[in-house]
Length: 190
Length: 119
Image (spheres, rainbow over the protein chains, first blue to last red):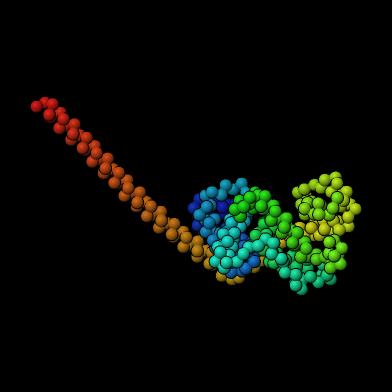
């Protein structure tokens, strides 16, 4: 943990409100980035981040300090995003279907761009947005934020096995989306 | 061995969390399709890890909103603890009054019994 953040956490735990506000200032952009990646929607991400900091504020006394503050915030943000997405989808009566096909009609499939690393990253961002939320949450938390399976399962309220299955499906979808097989290859494989 | 039997483990192998078995390794060494998939998984994972350092710029006003919400939450908490404090004091007072009443009743009863015995 960077010393200034560690110092702020200690002060905030001792009841220093200014220190907690400073912690927010230092970390909110990162938390917002994660929330945006999890929800795929800026408005939802804003709601998630606000809720996450309120939970962090209320639960700061339970933060043991053996993990980085940023990791602790990732877990809270992931939990809030999951709650938010479940609530939103209940409201909209959308079906969260893991097997929903990822749209294949994006301009990002131009093969000329495939060797370019930055283009790959751009296409990856689009592909992540195209994943069903259940799959996106797991792959973002594992492969971008390096959270262990156990933590992911705990924050999303699923079993570790379910988390691993979703991760496998998400990676497979991303790979297929980023490196689509030519029609004749696909036909050969059948 | 078929590609499908290896496919399940390719992503985890690219991540390094799973080691392919001898038969699987032998298959991948001979199969161009599986080799390509392994390379693709590695590229995807590398690109994902690189995203870790990216910070997306939030729209202006988010920080102010978070701090305002925290302020409101802090005030709510302070009011709640004040109410809880009052409630505890009230209950404490009630308990003390009940205990005093009970003690008084016991003293009164024992004195009455003593007077009855004396007469």
